[in-house]
Length: 68
Image 1 (cartoon, one colour):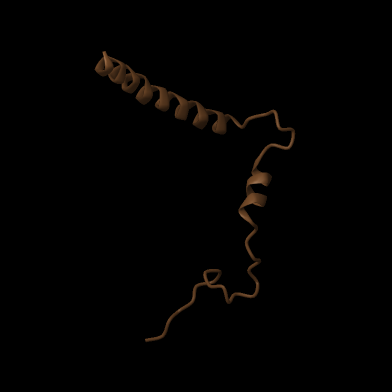
Image 2: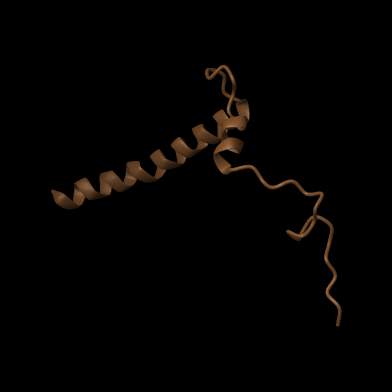
């Protein structure tokens, strides 16, 4: 049985550039002016905070009731 290598999946492909370090990719994805947030990023952050508060609020209330 012969193995078939798909284009771009193996490290032996000489035309494929080496991947950038993760720090460089993260730096490129951030806005250059540092102030503006992408609306999608803002929505994700807002949803995360809402979920955190939705879980943490009742959990804290329950713990306070158990201590009393």
